[in-house]
Image 1 (cartoon, helix red, strand yellow):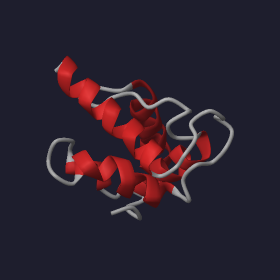
Image 2 (spheres, helix red, strand yellow):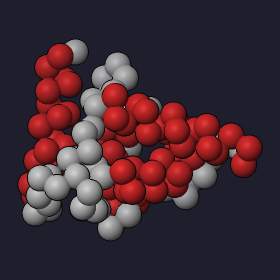
Image 3 (cartoon, one colour):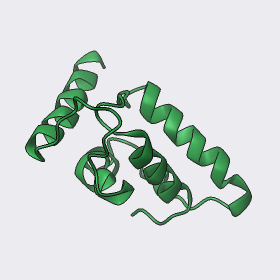
Image 4 (cartoon, one colour):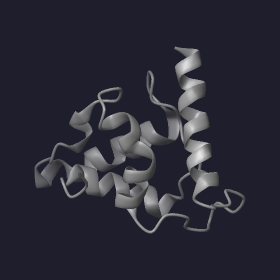
Length: 108
């Protein structure tokens, strides 16, 4: 499990480096939007069955805020095989856009 966690962390950092993103300034936005972040980092696991594909399920309008906050917490702190991603890896604005896009079913 620990080995898989390290591999996922290295993949995320390699993605940042490959895209020419400097993770040194947390207030800077390094992704165009949540869709780009999902496509470049999250899809690697969530679209091939390593991470649950159910992350893309559209939630009812009255549950979107709860689901958005839940996704943000899991991304920031990790859960099981899901690694935690620091603000230097995905900025707050992009993470909120990503989480809201997933909760509303807009990110595929």
